[in-house]
Image (cartoon, rainbow, N blue to C red; front, side):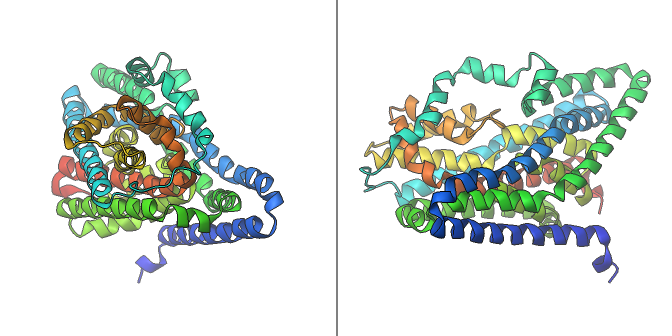
Length: 421
């Protein structure tokens, strides 16, 4: 009975309800504008989307200082480079295994269901893909390395380059840990700062329903949902089968490691999942997810180490979509790809997709670049652009689920059976 009266739990439940209600109202308002006031749709979408932009920018202003302070404190508390190496090794082993499975699921379903076979390409406007295909010209190993290694921590923080901040924070944390007691005041100050930022998260999250309302209303105002679903039923339904399969695999693996505590974890991350789904941004829930995983019982030093790495290396939903969409485009153009070529594509995606978190339309850029490598028309991106937003909703939520499970499982590995309740 006492648990039902828990104010924190009630607040979390109300937030989820408000967000779901905001999604419904946004869809209704957007549909009304699209149906009855089509001449206002473009301006309406542009203006109402500002609500989502404000919310996401409020979250983004928190991410860099939160990643830096929590990661440095976490590494300093781990104490030595061997502990960092041990946890980092477990993290990367999980991330690459999850990525491979996600890519494999996408490859399996696109080959089994053949959503691109027999597609009519006559009414596809390839000009809509220009903003994505233009970005692939600068997609190279050099730019990939430059995207990972920071030349300035201030520039990395200003642009929210999570992986670059992670690299600097690891060096900073290891250096602090090696000095010993002299840096305790610095670590204490950073620890207190991280708690202040997490308090800011609570304030920012109160704006989440308004942000989700704006994001959904903007999309429904400009897109004819009935036409989209009719035209892309095969692609979208096949994609949903793939995502559902990935969720099933992730949840089964999580249950194997977490047992009955998986139910508690899912209750904790409902709000982050819904926010990511509504805003198509897993980045928008990073601070909230940090807080919820710590409340679930994962040690703060594990969360602060795992989650930033996960946002760069463990994008399960995006990975599944990349193989699915790349092979779908090849099917649409009638380009046969043998199993050997598809596995080569899978390995290429495995490497090129790492460290692209935060890049606008990152999945599409990687898909376009991969298509170019395998002589598949890059303009084929235009095939999936009209429905990509709806696919992105499921990708973002899946990315959040995957990182939550990865962090919780590694946390249990590190803490054994002593994980807090």
